[in-house]
Image: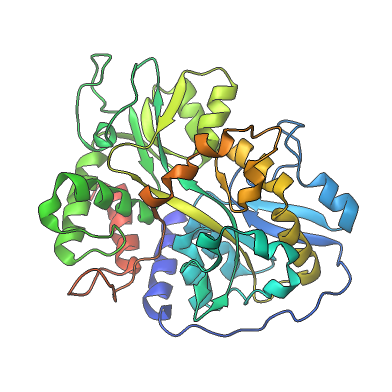
Length: 385
């Protein structure tokens, strides 16, 4: 099923990226409809069920009368598929999904005048190209961060300096091979991680942007991923499955999200994370509204709520991300005085944020390989081809 979804998304994208729609836009707010339906990454919308200290839903529901219903998704492709199905109000989309949603006419322009806290958003994100087209905003920044290298500290007494521990077969510091003990992300956008690694280790390829690859550069990335395929224990997309694999299945290194790192640490596991010398891919997630959102008033109320310093700081503490509202970095009890720095606020320039690859690219004199190719070729790699 997942591979069918990947292929359908890729084929749609092949013909959809081009002219972007203006779409409808909410002009003024009315009465709350009683609920809001949101597609979100795991850990992004908490109501205290895992830890009662982390709850930014209950108060919102009591204040607005809007019941929050959440559908979690493990990859951007799943989010796009769900938005294509419809019936949802909002999605916390990463940059490799947002332009697809815009070009596919699945989301509507955001009326920032209806969001009083818009002015508090980090200026580096307000007009980010993954949610702003022709000066029209199709989303509101939520959180950002990097795809970290998570590792077992019993195996690695010191933080790995390079992503080579998951891309190249090698003997780890505990004297054992990494074969069968590492993981990779189960999504076509992971091809960019391979390209980022090659930027450092094969500079002769001339890769300037991991999302803008010529045929030769793309071929080299696929070759690296096919070699990695022989070592991978599992391609992960479910955060909780990865947590279990690091706990019970002998996995010691993988690309991951800070969410899994924090959860494993809270369970007393020997886990840490790092951004290696090559840098990292990452995500700057945007709350976007479905073009046919059934509860637009509650949706706008939620967006405003999501930008409050309290919500932004609590979420950053829980997920290990960086707030889109810089003011959230100060005075949050859960996040702490150094929380934003710990979560990578200083790494903004080192992160290559997820972005949908297109054939027309700015860093190469020739055309680049479009995303639909990434989808079909990554499916082949997962299948051992």
